[in-house]
Image 1 (cartoon, one colour):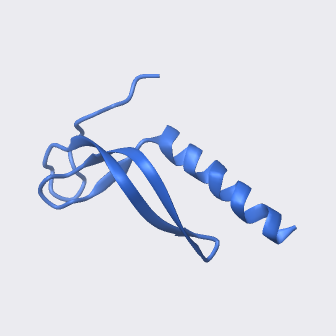
Image 2 (spheres, helix red, strand yellow):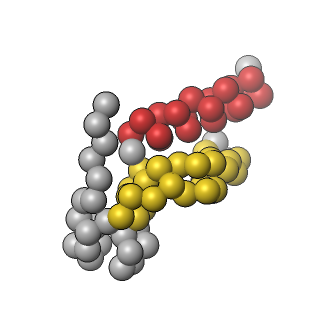
Length: 72
């Protein structure tokens, strides 16, 4: 599947750059998670980050694996 790269930032209209982020911290279900080696579009002007749908789907699957056993 082809990824769209170098989009215009919604905040400042600057052209983004494709980068691989080493660690991305975020919270889901009240817990903090760290995703490693995530490909994203980053605005060099304001720092806004745009994640690819496939990357987000993979992260959500891993989170559900970690969280759902605790809920059941």
